[in-house]
Length: 211
Image (tube, rainbow, N blue to C red; front, side, top):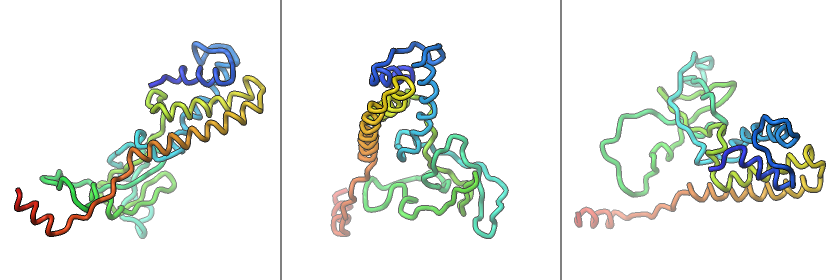
């Protein structure tokens, strides 16, 4: 995976600007790359519900200031960009089916209600865990297609302050949008659920007899 300085240099190459060895050096390329790269990295979590940026955390309970609406209030994780689902903490399973029509995990079949508001997660689930999109802070974690979209978006933002080239900025912005859509689609395809095939009771009975 690419380091941030590598992506910055590729973005600078897109606008025919000089390369840099460090974001702290005194060149205009380094100064502008340092100004735009970190905020853009933080924005990545807003682009999509990335599978590679998901986290799961048992939530810390807070005093519930909305007891008429929710049974529990929890602190929002410090690195959260967007909450996805609340999970109830349960005992370890002793056995689970290998296949079938049930949702995996079963809590997906009936999503547990929650509200994220004013820095708190409200839920009726005791000892809840949260599935969420984490804030991206390390460029080395970016998959190749996401790194490419990041590179082009950064180049679009650098074209004006570094090269004073609005035409290049517009062209790169369009290329960055296409690269972003491609990265989002690729990630969605990786985690898309396979359609469940209905298994009749007769088939299940035959499978039991065969066993």
